[in-house]
Picture (spheres, rainbow, N blue to C red):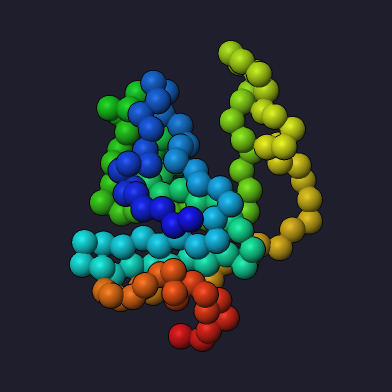
Amino acid sequence: GVYSTTVDEMFVPYLRPQECGNHTDVRWTALRDEEGWGLLAIAAHVMEFSAHRCTPHDLEAAGHPHEIRWRDEIYLHLDYKQRGLGGASCGPDTLPQYEVWPEHASFEVILKPLKPGDDPATKSKYKHHVI
């Protein structure tokens, strides 16, 4: 399916700031501003992504959500894989199917600009189209 959200809605204000909002099994993602200009990222196979108004360092440096340094820019993270949640600190460890182990891998992502009115779902089907 195709889903829609905002960068702000993807943030989870955990008591201790940490990475959050990761989306898995994604074929493409698009980010747009209020005028409709944006960026389309298309995975050759599948990818994971998250987007934040702060850097990973900003999250790590903050002891509490109100201490996060929010920025004007959006930081888009495109990943081959991320390990699933769990760490056995207060519950079970990550389930085996969500663990990530070292492997040889190829990860290809195509980035395309979006103009107002462009349909990212349609534009994502032309993976090898030269702009």
